[in-house]
Length: 330
View 1 (tube, rainbow, N blue to C red):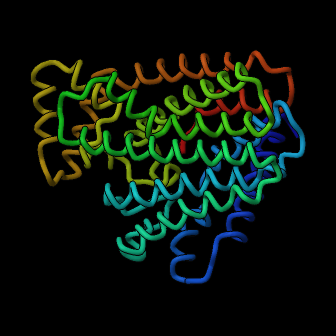
View 2 (view 1 turned 180 degrees about the horizontal axis):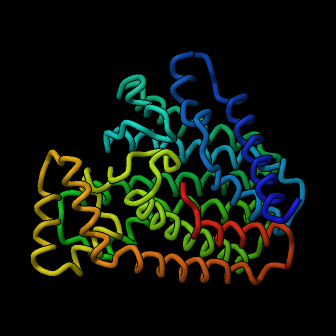
């Protein structure tokens, strides 16, 4: 078994433990709510955030089983945000299954998201760590929940604007995507009693990875394989989402092409031909090549943040995961 297969096996092992904990510990007193709440969990997913928590913890401590409940808490907090985002965006598919509000209805989907958010705080209680650290973990989960709401608000407001800047986009991504990766690595270090300097490095690693992850998502949402990606290709463009690629294209396309792209964006109902033309215009702007360069630079910076930690398998696995994300297709 080579190193990549070994890393994949460890990744799968952690994912299974996270899923088992979630499914065995979610309250199931109301069957419909339970089914809706665990819908995305059973549909699959990468479990990146729990992996980051556990590997950040394992940089400095052993027995990661002690913090499985906290890693599971972050995963269901993430799932809560997906359920609510899908309602707001009216997305029909997530992880190749119908979205929660599509399979049931919007009212139940809202409740399922709220339920998962509340259960995340309950899960922390099960972790085998000191009470004072549990308190700090709860505080961080509260803070990151607020950041997710702020980032989603910015994302929604951007849909009505043509003049969104790259700087505004980066701020939105830091809140909506980067913050949850950032808190994952921070919490992992916190539970392992990392120093302030180490916590800062872990925080920055998670932040830079999260921004890169979102930009790669933007790329895959435009030119990826729909079955692998799990969502319809071009859906961001159809919804008027201001991705890095779209913002860059609007800033760099020449007059005629820019007008064509703005005309497509201004349509409330976009045809498949509109989406295909929009994708072609964005490609012509050079946005994809620039986005890939930014991702590589961010990930190089992220990997460098781990250099203060002793060499270990967990350090190598975090570095490999960052490098792998550049080539990911889903």
